[in-house]
Length: 74
Image (cartoon, rainbow, N blue to C red):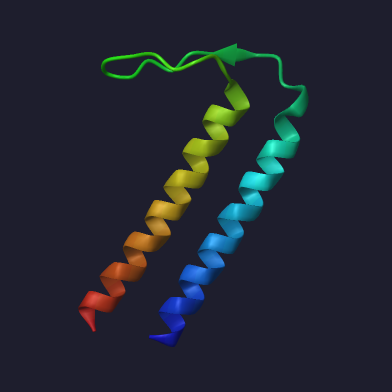
């Protein structure tokens, strides 16, 4: 139980720090695109933000899914 809490805390801390670095890094980004969703389009977002958020959400989801899977196995 304690190790899973450590892993969740580390995952959240790591991904939050990546998000803050991403926010600092895209300050001078001028290349913007719209993301086409199923029914709508988003506002124009910097390409680096779209790629960075995709990476961070994948990292967060993958880490939390493996933590849940390990807990169910035991």
